[in-house]
Length: 158
Image (cartoon, rainbow, N blue to C red; front, side, top):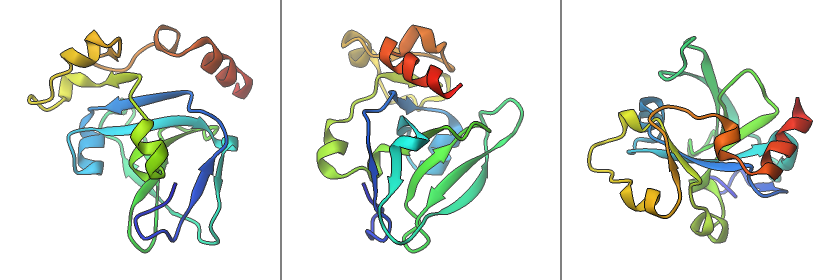
């Protein structure tokens, strides 16, 4: 993947654990859109491949009950958001699907829609549900959504 100006490039060495379509108000504001799509990967499976590194910015999280900031990596030139850490646990990262290379980005589909209690009203998720995509008003229990392989891969990190 890469930022808009291609100053920062990256690669992901394994399939995502899961792909979220998040409708929380933090993601809406941060993305400037109705929702954000993030694929969750282990930090050790993500590599910056360019000489330039992203700038990490602490962003207040509106959806965090503790008010903790999440860390978002941006390109210093074009300000494209590339990935985020949404908790103190830095072993997982949420890669912005829009920053993936075209062939990967166009194939990436959400496994789950989260925080739909704050989704914009014109987003209709009935077809997603008909296609087996899980939809949650808030967050979810991993065991209900993640594949067995993804749960095993996460367990290694704990």
